[in-house]
Length: 448
Image (spheres, helix red, strand yellow):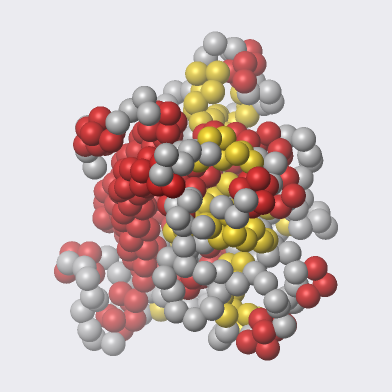
């Protein structure tokens, strides 16, 4: 058998490291040398954390910048193109292959890198296996043995990877790589659509650009004359500073009413629920379908026009705009459920709750001293001061952004379908039960 056809089978990460298939396996635990807040600034070397790794991509531009002097004092943790990254602490199970990049970059304590002998194990194949249900279940099993949401590097070396022939790895990398690219494109499209909606919200309701334009005798940009006519041409003083003339100042509760409704799914053990949980939000922004017998505690009902706001650890923003909510939708009691009031829409609530200013104010409402157990008081959210636009402006805003968020919801569903297909194809491709042409046909059957 040639080296290209060598099959190792199911092997532990520790064994792969021992025989040199994995050339290096390091995490970003620098001990006493771990960078402090003062070591970061506007310029420097990106220090990657789990936060900037998502959907198989690494957002280098969002990473904190470590000063050169501190980075030069570290002797390991620097990544290279084709390293496979795995998040193992707090947010566990995110995977990405490092692309070509300029300069240097490091990993933080929440990431591990795997540097491979690419003549025996392909990075894209290993990343696909790490993303599979097989490996993710292994990670969950390790976390189930501890109260801490982490899989330390020593525990990682006990986990196993199926290593097929190089030919099979190449086929799988080709097929699943194309599938992952389609998923990434959908997510990038969603990011663009949301950025457009958020920019419009900021322009209209935070910066008041249309009012400034009219005050200066200019026509507001990007809107029809009919829409521009809905905005005043001057400001007036308020408790929140200058606001458009005629607009009111009130409370968040004036446009977002808290919905309360406790449900015990165990009372309906055979009912299938859409469960909006914190882990579901963190992993893919899609609810999990679970029978009532699988849900062990009381939940809050989720109406069709709901927006979910996590009250746990507001420094980690979790705002969820559910799409196509069914009749048996429930969410974790760690979410506060809000529905529109005063002529607002759920899209307006969502955009308001995801602004930097709202996050800043939310973090001031916490109770609890531990960073991992801080919670927001529900009444505090409803009582936060807010500018209240006229109903006709709210209606126009909803008309413009609602199709964007509907498209985002459609793309999320398509991404989930493709991810499920990926997890279905991988074990069959590895075992040889499914050949590449059959896999390609299955992929073509799922249109984007």
